[in-house]
Image (cartoon, rainbow over all chains, first blue to last red; front, side, top):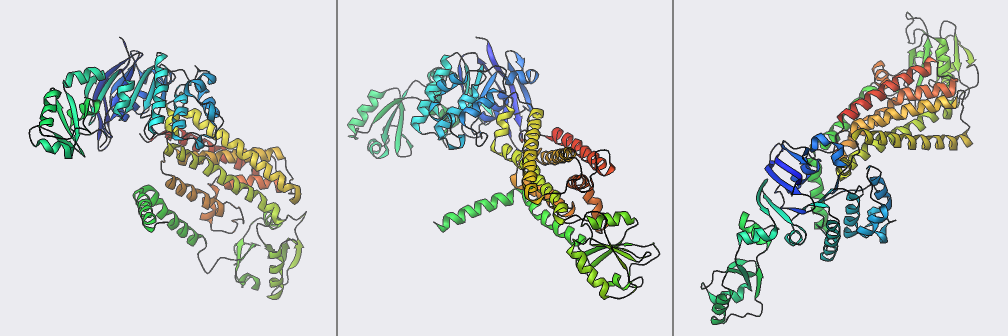
Length: 295
Length: 341
């Protein structure tokens, strides 16, 4: 599939820190690409360079094969952005904000469509200062869509939302993806990336350390499952199984779940709180970087 | 209410303030500059209460030697070469009295309380008697003189803070970053800010003027449309000055400090409450480069003297304002940055 968006050897050097250090990747049209990493990994800076909001110190970003620097405002007309934290004009209603942003673009998506897609009906005439976190994110998503963009950038769109609001937001993203739009998502929620992304890149210390579909990356790095027990229960087996302690839980990575269960039964370890789960992106990140994503 | 919470918040906020070196610098520098400036302007044995113009040749000393009245304490006597100018100033309450020593006459505005008090002092000190003359034509009330100053001051604050402070707040809150990601250009944003503030400020100023005029009945000898033009150009120059301040600043506190540094001297030196006639030459030199000064000069010339657009009293300040506007706009526009990259 031809790349819609392409990052070539992107570098961002600040006076005291190299935030992005030679990152290259391609985003094909019609997929949801996720950029993952802990705080300070360089993912937001990378995305801001892709958006054209921050100038790269080195390398370039290409859209449909042409440098975005050369395309200038023609590029900005074709993209939509939802920033992690954006203030809106105070004292304007949701509808007024949509109309204002719509007026800045030559291509306009009908306001009624945006209202329906992002489910804004209930608070359409409310001052944007008086919206809840979830409502605000839906408005910001609608603003990102006012120009019917080809690429939509979502920078940590569900940070700070409660689980219900987060799941509602995922539904919105899925419906936009179903329209054939290309999405670039940054997040530090692994579940979000797994649910929404076709392709992910994992960043750490300004570099891309892994790239591929979530399923492929997990299959490449793991062929085992994880057995979890409370630490007090796992202590019964002593050193007969190599448990690793994470907080109050002890984890065992193994390809032989049946064998591990036999050992636990022999040691008469209580199994009522035992959990067996497949490997997740969180495990992958830990494996690759030695860091917990939420640390 | 927990004291520990208050202390923690106080500590955090204080650290934020102290670590914002630019804002801290201005917070220290501004009062120092203000105190130093005022000390210089009002230095000496104390600020005189009255100002009197003396028409006399250069060889005549402005002291009791020439007339005992010239030794009156708390009165600033200054030499004025042109009698007509001195008369006009008395008429407009810019000075309290004018004395023509060679002609042995003095001019007083019968509506000026300061003038009446000085007249009593003049009669009391003895010396050669001076003949009383009232200024020709209708005397101007203090309110007629002060009204343009009040309206101009209000307009100045609205223009400077309404543009400068708001843009810095937009930048800090990320709103400018959001706009940068749209096809809106920096020039379009700047023009929209200038236009929006100009229209609002003009509408408010006209409304306040008309509202006050309904019961104060301002003197208006000139063309109201010329006054509107002067107000518009003056307002534009101050909006552009606000834009210049906000072009790159990201700290609201620094912006506040800079805007205060511009607005306070204008309030004191531009002739809002009292004229700077008789003030040191350096003060008058500084005052002429503050946009409020030419705006008030032109406005008063139109309202009180009936001056028209072609008169130097209007045209010169207007051209100065236009030059300032162009300069501030160019510097502000070229220096403008959406975000601190």
